Image (cartoon, rainbow, N blue to C red; front, side, top):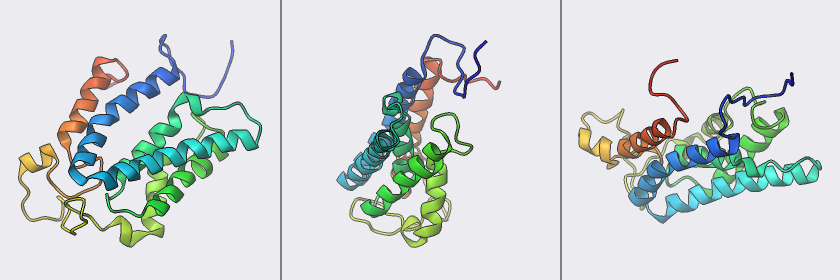
Length: 196
């Protein structure tokens, strides 16, 4: 019997295949955010994903460890972090957050399956504490007009929430995109729609 660190799967699907399914599931919400907020959102996502991948690759290269970028977990970390940010968030600060997620939260604790907290969520919290003003400035379009988030607005049209016509972070405004990702994960049997 061989004992190793997680992730542990009892299927023929590899961790990399699961990660690729998760990336595909995140794409509808990410695409909706890019359509809603424009090229700034696309650039922000590219920076967070790129920084996450490069940080992990350099970490493995400098420490002469086996390259782990091919498991695609860094892509998910960068994508989740980017999708949780306001569309007008400064690019350099987003890169700092992505670096923090991968190096400080994930790799210092041994990499995938060994980190005790979610790297993207922890990086979001780090950015929220360090860059509070930028993290709480929401825009309704790519031109960065400030507005209330759906929770702080007095009344919000449910169709606007469903289709992504509200202020918020890149990946949270379109419930339809999130729902499509959930359906894909259920169909591909990466997750189960029923409680465990």
